[in-house]
Length: 54
Image (cartoon, rainbow, N blue to C red; front, side, top):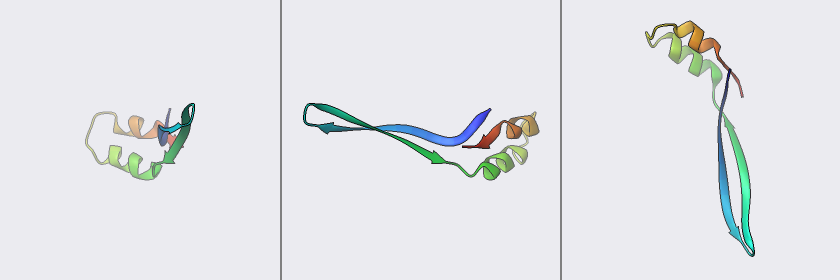
């Protein structure tokens, strides 16, 4: 299963160290699935089914 989102970390320098900020940005899951289906790759439907809303 692949959550349809990007995840990343920002580090800001603060007095005495670092301040982490975690971010998640959702992808348009139907666009990802459609991209697999129209790509012509083997097992495209199986690959498309693995993506779930993030």
